Image (cartoon, rainbow, N blue to C red; front, side):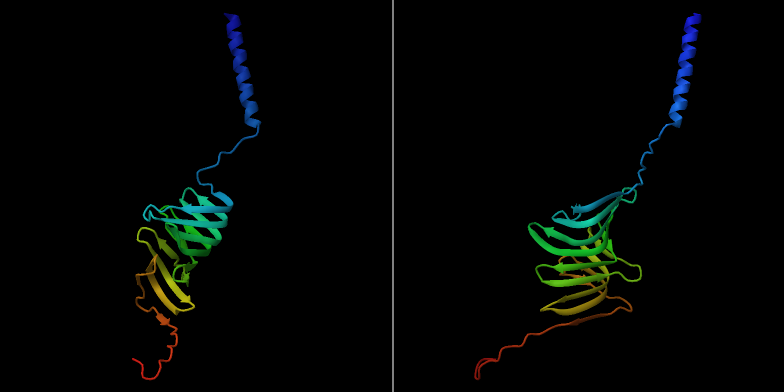
Length: 196
């Protein structure tokens, strides 16, 4: 019996010595759930649940994902697009774009090119209010917008809410501005005696 007690006592001492030695060794720190994930030269593809026919695609040199906020931040986007089926609806450029957990986008500035209409659209935030892409309603919410093109002229509006296809919009409100300039092509001269 004395041999068994001695053996258990020795084992206990060895375990204590091992634990003390381990406490002085290198330790690994587990990363917390709040750590951001960073990617370089990344392509981000977005399939919004509320806009099932569309695919948004962005190429960005720097992308970070915050799992706590559920937000992805893309920097220096030069090559972004929204595609419906096989057609590119519009392209997007932005210095900084955030995608939230509902697939909505926000930015201080977006530059959009409407492919079919050949129109450039500059969307700017104002006084801390950002440009918002609301996926559920299929609209841009824009504090200040400028639309221009070679055969279009130029339009500027404030507080605009415009559909992704730019066919329906609301603009204005108290103390806002809006104006449009259109370029008219000259009519060809009709021959004398022709119908008017």
